[in-house]
Length: 72
Image (tube, rainbow, N blue to C red; front, side, top):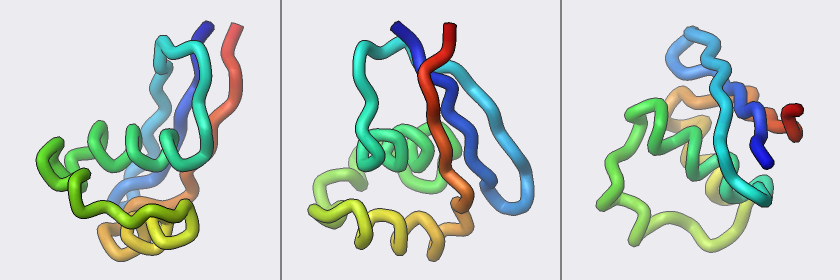
């Protein structure tokens, strides 16, 4: 299965496909943070534990409007 992930990073809209079986809202934000370059892989150790707090971090880093859906 795959998912279409889209987000806006620094006023640029990005749309990509992820080849994963499942995708939670929290994981979608993590993928967007890593893929956009807003954070590097080592930074995830200090990431917030809740979805709401993670979204706040993303907003602070200019990553917004994160959406995902199954793709066919």
